[in-house]
Length: 374
Image 1 (tube, one colour):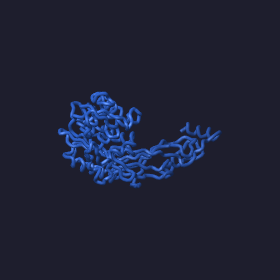
Image 2: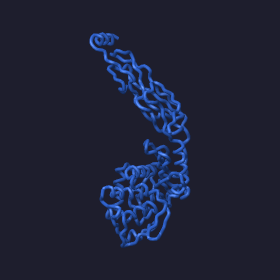
Image 3: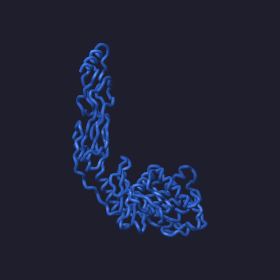
Image 4: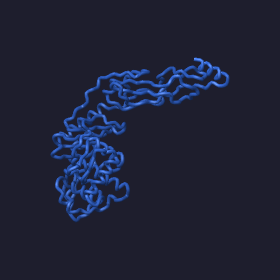
């Protein structure tokens, strides 16, 4: 659905300021993004260094999905269970030492029931040791742009130097969907049964009918309760990372608050129609015509927050006079949308609506003489 806000179109920037109050969440840090437009639309202390807890497992799964895509393993590959994996405390899928477990089961054990034991089994198989795998995870995180993240283990177990941020986890969440869409459905699985034990997904939003289809919960005593979530309604998708809520229910409520706000306040707007004339006359030199009109090249649409549309200006910029020859459709300027006192949002092409043929022969010579005498 498209909306068309009122615009002030000018030839010079007009700054209008009255920033809308942003949504506040009861959490240490958070970030909400809209991947289609590439914008983080809400954030607070998103670069704050924290212990990511079980959100770490998103990177363990990303590494595993990479290995599957590269053909290094398959869903049927049997992964041995070490004593270290079997003995690991915390959340478990209850794999047994000495057994071999197919990758397909371990994926569910990590994504659905947050099995620390499954994470170690995968780390040891892909990295030799969990410590080596932690370095592999860190290297991959850096390549993804997660500049403030260091992994020391595969599960998120508290470990000195095992750190990340809300903004880095948000990058990872988006990349999981973009790079491994064929695996993404596992994050929406609401329960998993293995070894006779049936366990629910700790992400309660999956069962609340609000469009959430992932991703992962986390909790560590020093930091509080985390939730990295993804939600889709109709054709729109948002990602959210909430760090340091006060309870498991609190992380769900704060995430849902953020997601509902995003769906209600971030929309695609239509500003101008293709062919719409914004500048009726632009002077042209060395042409058979004195001026030509400038129009919008294509339908001008972009995502904005509702609050941004209240303080929106469109500024047409171009050089005058133009110099012939100019063909219909040649770019001759830009239309820049700005909000909140001059912050640039998006730029659209301004093109020639009519042709400006070049003067030739004696006519061109006479015109050049006149220009040089001015």
